[in-house]
Each structure stands twice: as C-alpha cells, then as structure tokens.
Length: 127
Image (cartoon, rainbow, N blue to C red; front, side, top):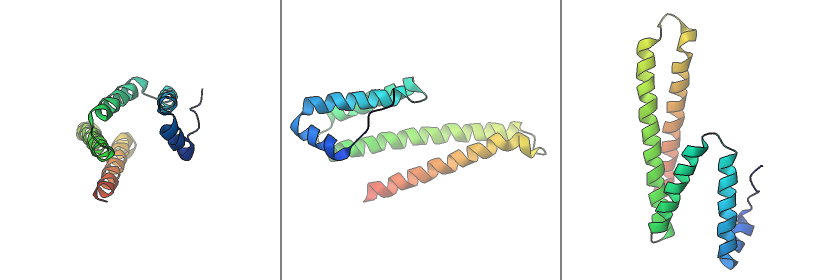
C-alpha cells in the first residue's frame, strides 16, 4: 500500500485542532512509509530513537538540535564504515584492472555524497 499523501497545511491544521487525529495520522504515515522501504527493521529502530528523543526534549528547537545531532552521528558512522571498506577494497582489488575497481569508485561517490549532505546540514544548523 502506498504511503498516504502528505499535505503540510492540512496536517498543521489537524495538529492544532485535533492532536489525537494528528498523532494517529503521523503514525500511519510513518509506518506505511517504512513498510514501503528497504531496511524496515533499521528504519523502525531509527524511528523509535527519534520518538524517544522527542519525548524528552523541552522545546521544538531543542528537538531539532537533538535530531540534527543524531543525524550527524549516523552520518559519521556511515562515513567510518565506508572509509573502512574503501581501505579494504583498495588493498584487495587489482590495480591493473579498472573494472575490478568499480566498487571502490562507488564507495568514493557515496563518501562524497555523505560529505556533501553533512556540509549542507552544517550550513542549515548555522542559520
């Protein structure tokens, strides 16, 4: 089943006027999005971490800062894992065969994408 359509203005209105309906809608939207994704178990675990963090913060700004910190930690971990695989593949793959080194090029591209995302998140946090 495809995820429900998200309409910000309607959702904000429901959140203001009927919090119980909003949280039910939010839960359904998150669950259906995760169910239609790869890596469901990890995404449910991440959502549990986000919900736990949201439950203990004192303001929306604290929530945003905490979630940005959590995202930065996940991206940092991803960078470490990719760098580890990059090192292993660089040692193991034959230098003379460019086709055999394609996985290394893909990891390089992933590392560049993660670095770009981290930079964008850092720029956003400074605003």
